[in-house]
Image (cartoon, rainbow, N blue to C red; front, side, top):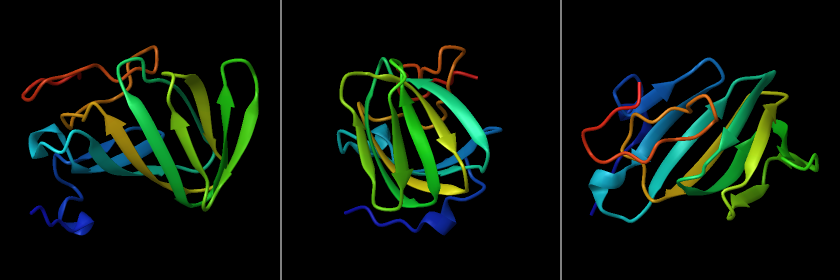
Length: 132
């Protein structure tokens, strides 16, 4: 059984921070669950271009207001209680109009240190690798 408290992971290698967001990775590849599980905080008034060409992701908003824009220009409002799933490796832009707290699940599981490259992609890492 795995039991963790998110506060014990803050300001450790399990919390990855960028200019637009911070992500606390509660479950990772090393936990052998077949997915990773994260809490991501999007900072207000930010825009992040993302393309998870190596991963599938489901995201559930538990706080805040924003929008996701598909590559074709279609926009979807995001607020508390909204889920979206990137089931086709969809390129998208995520905008936070306020602080947003998102719960994210990735398949395959992330190793932990991943950040977006110039295309908005998380690399497909194996345990012990970094992409910085």
